Amino acid sequence: MSREWVEVYKAPDHVEAELIRGLLEASGIPVVTEARGAQALPFILGPARVGGYISILVPPDQEEAAEEVLRAREDQGPAEQDRGE
Image (cartoon, rainbow, N blue to C red; front, side, top):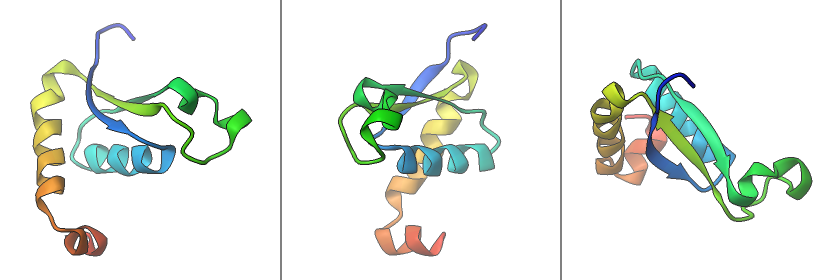
């Protein structure tokens, strides 16, 4: 990467990482994911939660916008998230 991106979220697995990536990208925020720890070895260990995490990174100038999107997601109740509201 030509510029330092900043971490805005740590996903415990690839499924949640893709969910967060989609949420941010739908808001127009570029995203890069990087597997950390044992999550970097899913081809050996399988898709189970095996330790480590997936780092969700955004450009520094998009950090505040990404955090707002993630805060709004947290403020929704589980039922609202399931319905996509």
